[in-house]
Image (cartoon, rainbow, N blue to C red):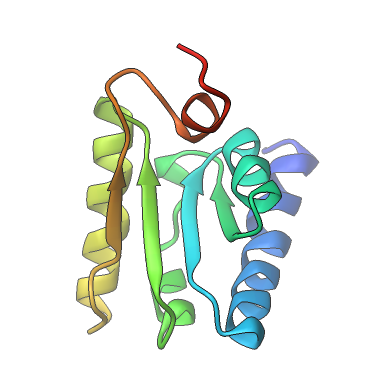
Length: 117
């Protein structure tokens, strides 16, 4: 069984993030992990954090209909797999594929924003 924090993040914050982005008429970023989610949020953008590629539910793609969606993928194999899985679920749902934000090699969102690595 997943720790409660993962369940909270996945099943509560994702729908909340989608609703807030829709209400504000702003784009939404799909990111991997809590730290990157908080980093995007602190930059004034809306972020839906998914705790790893295996936790993405293809049915969620429909919830993003009519939103401008970006995936900020980690620059590693897991990030590539995550991006492929999310993108495919959008296409399978009849939606436009999300725009992919490619980060420099070896960096994730937080590294990029903080200048680390």
